Image (tube, rainbow, N blue to C red; front, side, top):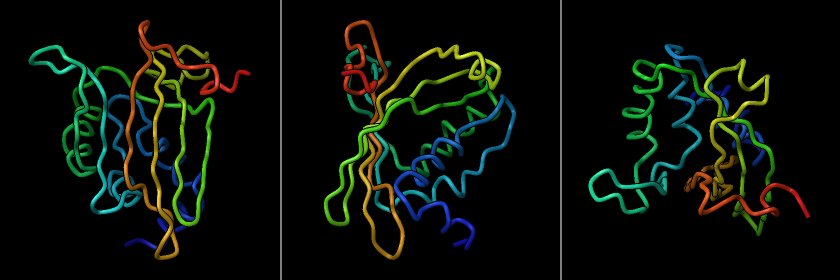
Length: 161
């Protein structure tokens, strides 16, 4: 474990921001997958809710952070023809004792320029479950769903009353 990584997991906000920062980059840029995996508890799950390519049904798709970085990470760095950036636009944080749940609404961009021009290609809602122990925050699970016409992001997840 690298000591500088511990600074990134001292607060809920820094842990989540580091997760977003680790994914960011232009096509071909190397990401810090070691730091990204460090954010997650060894038994954590990443769960995306998307269409199954076999039957087209929407279902949860489970993977470990290691599987994510080995497959999707390689795709982001080497195959994808665009960059990838995410920006959190609203967050709802609930904490009880040493556990936390964060609804993090974000926008995704294909380049830094698109992000600077506020031109997202998709919005997502991320559900982070975290735990504090061993003097740091751990991401226990990350569950996400992208916005669709059928399921627009609710106003409360955008900070609109």
